[in-house]
Length: 78
Picture 1 (cartoon, rainbow, N blue to C red):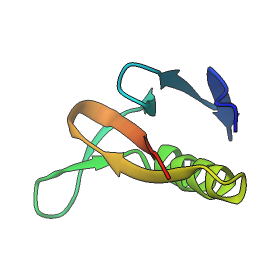
Picture 2: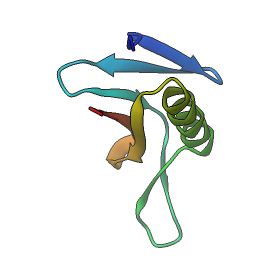
Picture 3: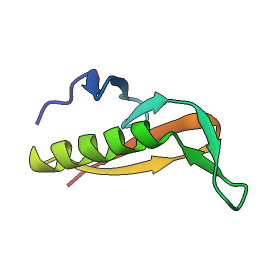
């Protein structure tokens, strides 16, 4: 299954990084009630939509987030 270079979900553009086998997009930085980094809510929902769309296409993917507003979708070999 072919991986697109860009995927746009709900106005968020996810770019595929072929070296690291993941899509990534950066949003605003938020903190949860424990003072930990949390992804922008709209961006996180878009990441979950993309994750589901990729899985439906037969591509193993998992949404994750890190510091400074980054959301990633790791692509795994089946």
